[in-house]
Amino acid sequence: MNDQEIRKELDELKNQLTFFQDLGVEFLICPEKRAEASLSKEKMRESKNNDNPLLVNLEPVTGVTDNEEAEWDKLIHQIMVCRFCPLYKTRTKVVPGEGDRRARLMFVGEAPGRDEDLQGRPFVGRAGQLLTKIIQAMGLSRSQVYIANVIKCRPPENRTPKPEEIKACSPYLLKQIELIKPKVIVALGKVAVDFLLPGAKSMSEVRGNFGEFSGIPVMPTFHPSYLVRNEGNKEIKKMVWEDMKKVMKLLES
Image (cartoon, rainbow, N blue to C red; front, side):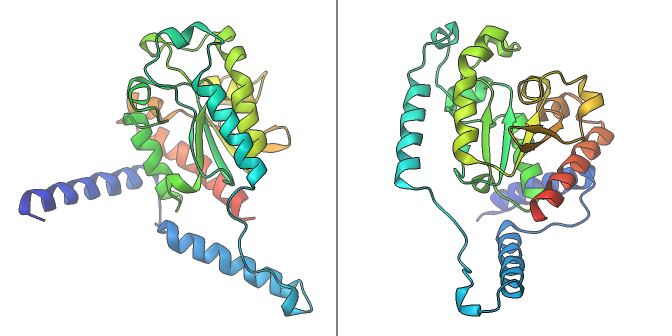
């Protein structure tokens, strides 16, 4: 690496550490170490709960079955060719979602934005970069969680999705949740909160308190784009981090 590349890397590291500091993160754990620690705890619990150590299964459950893979393939194809609402006329690319299809943690946002529409991937713009940093602060990586939106096509000018658009697209998200079976869902912003927790009040009243969707705990929190719009407000960042700490605690229980 030349001097310019090193300076760029250092600047990016500085920005990320500053963001973690603004969140109120008190420690950092790399994803690999957190995974190793979680597996070690699981091994200890299993050893204590079994008299015969030969019966202890120390291998983590990973991957999806052939049947699940077929269901995923069918679902993604249906999403990619969907024309159930007018948004298909203005989209560049469909954004089905991405991540671990056996993830214990799932993030659900509102809808793709401009960058997502161009790349066909969820949360890759400025808001997505913040979400990635939050996930990393939790000791995880994007590949270890699943990220999706309530609707899969970008509304023109990033407007709020219409009720009929949400209704037309909702079966896709419902099927994703059914297949993934996450232990916790984080609802990012009011649209996701209203979908997963119908009847919820304002974001300020519900955020930080677990609700439930089909037996799955749901943590309502601010959408990363809200953090972008209020970039200088450290209190909002700390509120989101407090929400994520509750999620982490539940995942580790």
